[in-house]
Length: 389
Image 1 (cartoon, helix red, strand yellow):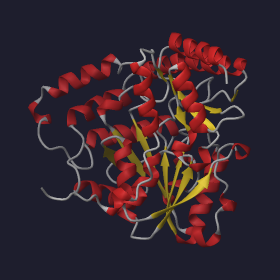
Image 2 (image 1 turned 90 degrees about the horizontal axis):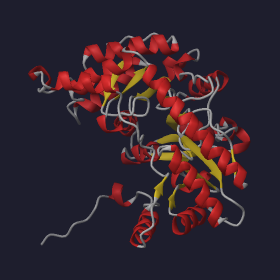
Image 3 (image 1 turned 180 degrees about the horizontal axis):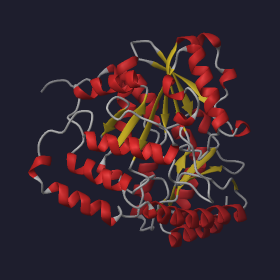
Image 4 (image 1 turned 60 degrees about the vertical axis):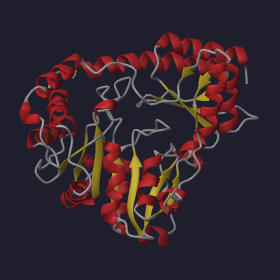
């Protein structure tokens, strides 16, 4: 029998912070407790029927059974460009400034391979989507974490980034509307990002997966709407959350042509592109009636109000989010993130995500997802009230 040794890149990953939660979940289940899982950011509503119909029709066409293009079908990339023009009034050359992804996570994880050499620095937000950090790490780079603090509306303060760090950084990852904090960004902030990137020659990677999940008439903007933004980097988008298509694995990146083409070069050596039938369904999602998105947002609005109003009534400190399907909650006095997470699970059968699972600056918070129906959210609030804190 051979000896198996994992690579240094795997061994260098931080400990799996959710392992203890998984253990506790299993213990609670064994006690026969009905678990309400508010930890997973995976939509519980089905994909709209017209998108499924488009897939069904495309899936039986033998032309779609062969290897797809690495960078995406021209028709899909063109649909993306048209959608960006309609939605954000951003002009894109679909042949050079759009690349199809097998979900935006794939592109976010792979783009550091195109620009990060061993020992290079990237600026990464904390708390933040863990793939920003691990993608840099797998490419041999190091992350410098920019803390997202309540007093700064969970936006990074570039004045706190040391000059020598900024000058060495090759890339920067930001994400608005934000996971996990649900914070949103203004055009003025994006202009600040552009100015900072230009002054330090940093490629900006903006994760915009949640721009279409917004409430109360709010319409999040694209980073590329800021003047000069397209010259500084790219924006990642996904059909996953907008159209309840997380399992379909279809997304895209748009922006600076040289950056998009470099990402495409990485992809051509790693994967064979997204299944064409899924891309055709994606065209239907982007091009046809968007009433389905409005309906989805109405559901999340009702759920948000039930959960947030209930938590506030119980005495927890939480802001009502303007976008995303996440609620970012300060833990009560006497708890840290892991302890409050454990309390809710062990005593209430409620799964939440500890804020420090997204980075050290997330300590003191937990994240709840609005991806269960309103009756379960009401029950979750009732359970929290009954167990206290």
